[in-house]
Image 1 (cartoon, one colour):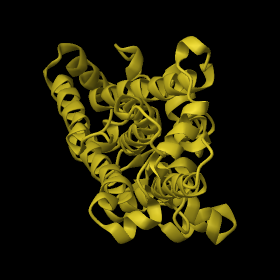
Image 2 (cartoon, helix red, strand yellow):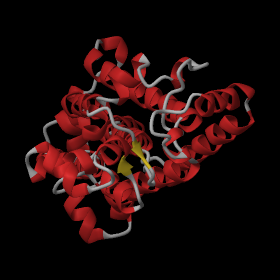
Image 3 (cartoon, helix red, strand yellow):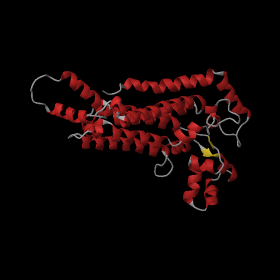
Image 4 (cartoon, rainbow, N blue to C red):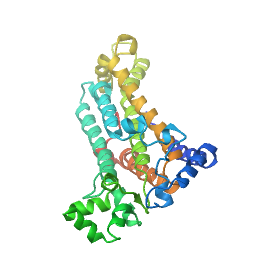
Length: 320
């Protein structure tokens, strides 16, 4: 009752197909040519230019201001959190009273916290600029407008802001650079979209499959129950407790059903936006580096516990 780890192959396959499409499709090639015909101010590097929407994108999803990017991907962790919480408050694995319920809830919260911490440190903050921005600067990236305005003198850029912290933030974070009208250019820009979408969707898959485990345990218990007045085992008593709260869709268990539908919707839309990102944005290496960071996090939180009992005792396995 857990998704096979081979299912994670859907992510590299998606990136591979999307990247090939971006090379072979006349539409995608025309979009890239449009970028080169209308270069951004200050002539950013090709790697950075791959991340910019063309002036007149030929595809709706090639626009960074498309509605799905603005209201789903940009706040993707909020949707992930809502879907995850819906599992905790609706699925019998977490709502059925049993001796294992507190432990399951605590371990589920810990797994979510670890995934959230990885997302936050990688894309939001890591004792200053996030890991993605730090790696960009280390590999030669810079805020082109600030560098041009200060003749390439970092000290002058810092002095312009009036404080060291504000100056460093403008120089070394993508968000501050873009807010100032600059161009984040020149380095290896790990795809934050790929990282977040892979981590969020795979986390929800593992959690949803685990959360549904109790329902299947009850069904199996029904099939294997022995007729007669045999005393119930501990497992049968737990199953009976779960069964008392498990109702199928026809009996009106709308909360459990709609929770799974919400999780499914987030996962499907997340996969689609991953596919769109693989076509229209970032270089091959930038996409694959985002994928590797996300899969590394998934491995530590969800796969490693299956083979390391001491770690499993801490983070648990969804639904067990």
